[in-house]
Length: 282
Length: 356
Image 1: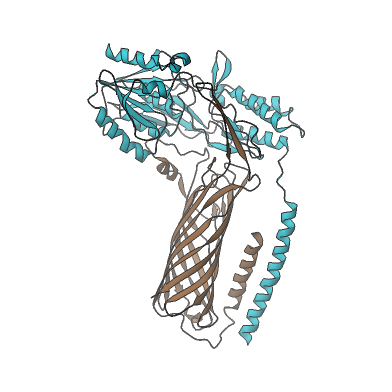
Image 2: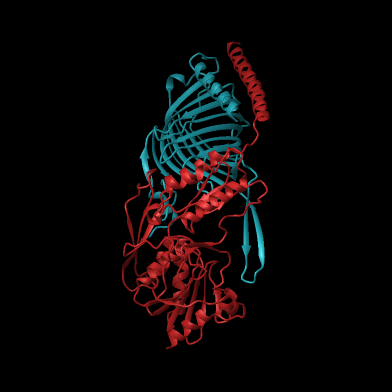
């Protein structure tokens, strides 16, 4: 999965480099005032390592579901997204580990119990973004918008250990580029980087038990504001849409997220997701 | 035309990069085979894990550097999985900590979890109790009428003489327990007394135990002081937190007898520490396991897992009972033979005590 990431970054850079050059004849306004509501379904891949708990690297291939809403006016773009990933997780190196319990009852009866070691993976992200359409590019086939996004992302793998759990409420500057090939085919890309994050991780001692608090309250006691040095999480999103008719749009999307967390100890994660999208435009 | 030519170029670059990527991925896949790290690497990780996270070296009066020096030379590149398992087992026995568990995961699962039972030091010797021989739910059910399962962890009913019975064997989610306990106490409010049986309470969330104990409290009392490791130095700890047991909106403040066992562990023991502080409570049974601290699970480079105590938990008097356990007010233990005959002498003794 490492190489497709490089490939997509190159693709994104190529598109950006062409933004100023292409002043083609296709001068359709970017869009009039328009609402889009959509759903995206697909597959993903998540690789993560949490040095606070484990020297092992974990991998999950979750199903991905996104709900999307976009509002576009002459000067602005607004976006509201919900992104859910659900799957199983296991160690990349020891994918077929078995745990063995020997049990004995009061009656003397003995029982051997063996379980595969694995867990479940769940991540959820909710985000709201607002972007200004840079007017000098609006009559080009390459159009640029810049703005910011507030996101809350919960990474919640569950298994024998607490490896990989975090919650990040972050603000990210974000840039979007759209290339309208013609009236029906559109390529787009965006890049964002959280610069200010309220990060919640398990503390050094890896438990959340606190007096008079439930698990979630105990977990969120550990939240702290951090910058890029403690939470580096760039994200690239590229896609293609096909305008079926005035009301319906379909497309495909690829999203790459990288995470480097340094508090309280190091954690790394890379997620990829490929989705097929359908939008209703009104 | 210009646009088309640029697009063509982009697509050509993408195609070449994809081909390269695919080729290199295949090459990489051929090379990668899961390999178990050298035993010495796993040993060092095991030693370091305790050194960096274990919270009870001072309480256990154990010099971990010396333990490392003692065992390090016994591990070589040819040390087998069984030998490493044996060696880690010896080191765990030195700690005498029931909250330390080794999960030796393997591809076939041929090594069992160690100690695989309750580990307790008695008369200077670590003993592993594989079976709980002082409690049987089946025997208890012979005494309890109208047995109700409100959740997997909380059961209740009535004993002879208008005495209520609540059996707690773990902790539900806080939200759940806050619904269950008022309901149970409403039903048992008119009882002359209540027996709370925690002989099979093997652990859970301390805050839930705190809440349940508060359901029997008539005043606010401190009962537990906790601090946890927060750095690699063995003296690095968080500041101490004091836990209080306090009356909950729905409480039973009549006479309460708690039944304890050597198998009452962890959050079951912090529950008992709280109950001991209450003037309306008397504890009958056995001294508990002596494992109070949180014990999260960590992993080793060879894929094995290990749980360990990260905290230093003390009673309100500042004393640590880790490895010792909480003693009952009165010692009385049901035996295996009696339990197999359906006779629970501790429960009978509790009834006698309450009917005096």
